[in-house]
Image 1: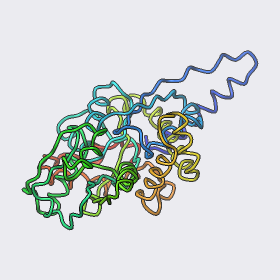
Image 2: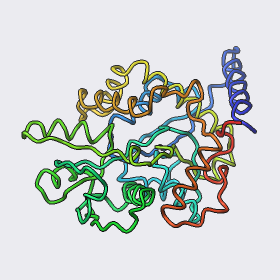
Image 3: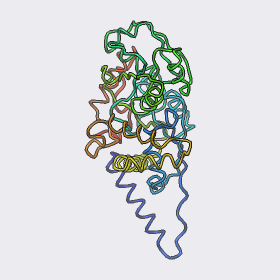
Image 4: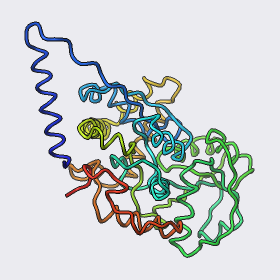
Length: 335
């Protein structure tokens, strides 16, 4: 069943349920279905739409009680969702394709960001990839940069370029860089870089950001992934979740100040100015048409196949048998 039909069925079901609930003596509404959604980072501005979905009631209207939890990288998200311990999670696409090629039971369920905001950041300029030879790069074991950077090197015929990964918790990336213990850190253009710039400028230092997308990492950025078996078992629930997330994203783009406020209200430890700056940077990183002309969340077969081919070639994976529907929910692929 394709997405429009799923959404139509979902909306009809909701309308019938609401109509029944308004009848005299009708039973109380069905309880909300608990859903756990993981982020692939500590809470930063790019996740504002998820909190908007909760606060504005989009997920509740779709029948879900959503709980949002942070993690320490896409690898953690993939393993947790794949094992069925979480329902959905935000993950970078390269490690998702890599995991699926190796047998992981996950699948893309929603295009959260059409372009990648994954980057490296430093306190010194690196004019070329070659100039990073032998440098130390801080990245957690499950950090998506550990997959994305080899993809970039492979695309630029530098697969053998020597460098050194330094395993570290994301919470200490900044301190490692500012103290000179590493040369570069894994970062996101829309999350880490704005925050790092604020800290570095107070110390009289300049931040240099190197976008993987600009180096040829022209694949999908972030997906919301789900457990393959769960997506197949309840496609209508997946369609309702997708529609609610689409509504939340559109609201967050149209009302960036309010989206930031909502996220900080749910997480008082966060700084409002930082979250707003990060969220605006996310929207900018998504491109000139962030909602994809009304097709936000959907993937296209040509770009999915291109993504599979790029990741497979760069990481020497056997992806010849992988088709778009093997890595992304068929109901969310454009006809």
